[in-house]
Image 1 (cartoon, rainbow, N blue to C red):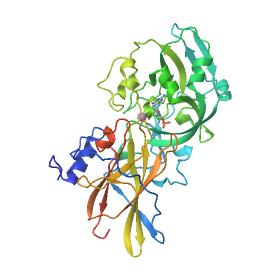
Image 2: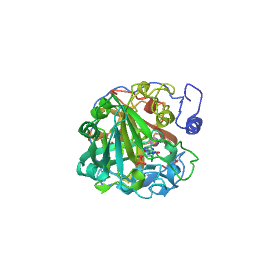
Image 3: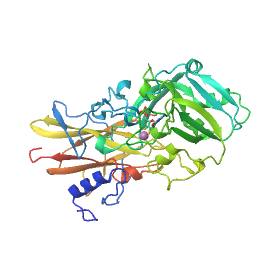
Image 4: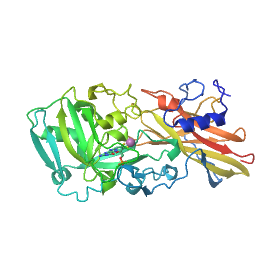
Length: 394
Ligand SMILES: Nc1nc2c(c(=O)[nH]1)N[C@H]1C(S)=C(S)[C@@H](COP(=O)(O)O)O[C@H]1N2
Ligand SMILES: [Mo]
């Protein structure tokens, strides 16, 4: 029993119902930095039998496009990722909002670059393509990513694109400002049942430059798909997907006291704002918090006995994590994971943990980072916990 008197099963149900706003009854003992984890070979001579399903998650088609326009989705199947194939194919990159039916023809696509007093320059898609170059691997996670959907509103890709700094500085504009609004095409044939239209976000120009933000034009070397914002979409490395505007058609300098956009307001809670600030300048950066979750629990037979190996991902946060720890129930101590992949730029990192369940029943798998250089409240609150049920016979 936890301090709030919930059994584990009740806690799990409550947290599933609560969705994003998980308030857990987990005790608040946070992990302590311990010795760095060591690499380890999984079960030489063992036989992999299959996987244990996660409990309390919806059964839904993964890696499949569902719905249309604002209600269109694709949930990426993270469970099949391996160290050898760490990046999903571009066709399986998650989708949150599919291309508008009104965007039948993309040509000729232009991006309007506007100064503070309204003077404008036009950048066409051809010119943009002539400026593109490799921009590295970056993880993108929807701030509304949840366990229910197997955390499938998250992917990584190797991007090609054009740094925003180049776009802002190459275009001769007479009046520049600190704040920049990036907007995308956002009119749809059909009204949405779940989302508010309005795709624009206001940034500090320096923030975009410092983060290495760019207009993405290719994903894993392939031309950007219509559903991902063809011909150009914003990528702000390390930020939640909601700021990564698709079908970009305007980049404008705006006044310091510009009102927050509807997209910023819609995502205020999920990007950790205090309330819903009225002005863009009062928004905290929508940076992804430290996050880690299991992607599969493998069952193995090793010398006649059952063994488990948990494989997971670590991403987000301001600085690379050196220690990652795991526990299999709220009453257990955190222990360092067996193996944590070294940092790989903007990509996620794999980790593994060999596990021998101490008893049958429900197990809540939770991770924590040992030396955080920033916010961990989502991780700490149990947002990324996943549960498995282990039977009497394993
Ligand atoms: N124009 C436009 N851009 C958008 C959105 C949108 O609805 N319209 N959704 C945002 C959200 S909430 C997310 S998580 C990402 C998803 O990008 P993806 O569908 O390419 O994965 O796009 C962002 N950019
Ligand atoms: Mo999102």
